Image (cartoon, rainbow, N blue to C red):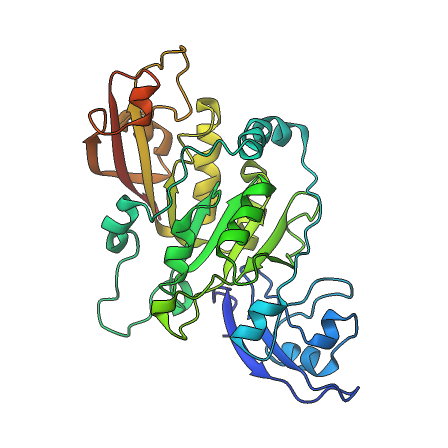
Length: 357
């Protein structure tokens, strides 16, 4: 679509005409998750350092920008070739002092493989409330999501959650935001068809000194036959560095899953977190939020995960989101990590937050 309101992340495979240098080229034109639209295309010639004029012309015809010289391209003659051609192109991320302070303890956890929050299977609350977060169309075949191209789902502080892959394999367009590069490296190693990601362009509203964007194609499960999952986009950088300008460039999201993100950050950062989330969501956008309630641990600490009660959440979301509790479950008598840490009570709650229009 050429509409400025059409979301990104729409992949279109197209065979380009033979290039002027007589190298046949097949390209993958993509409206990225960014505005303005970006095409990232490639051929074997492009990967070896040569320009592909045919692919570039096809990209322009598709209404997108061609990557500047020296930037990584992505493409191939087929989905299988695409997976094989994805290459690792990762640059060091430059962060300000505040971001360094926020991210340093999490980088240490990743380096030591202290990932007690990570689930190997899709989150049961996401599975249970999927139709609440992403309502099916009223009529079969009716378009959903902004621009009618399907739902775009945000994962703030995404880590390497398998929930992103689970949704991408169902056709949802997934974007994760993560501040620790090791998380993205491990996620790609475990779930990318090429075991890595490819760096893609960003619009000028987003500083390359603060953020880098990576794309990957998840592996195809054997029981899915030839069905290709949606690509997953991963924005590497400090979530709290996303202002209104950057959020607008990323294009508002229809839905968001927060399981373990808001409860992980320091309580004094919650107001900034929910304001950033508000900037990123489309009017009426839904957030499925999972929180915990517990007392102090044996060592006297209060988190992470930090307690967030329903009243806490309603105060945070006042004027920004409508809050509806979906469930609240006692976990203390289960095989519970917080109980082993000394908590005497532990409830897990799920909420639906709807951005006010």
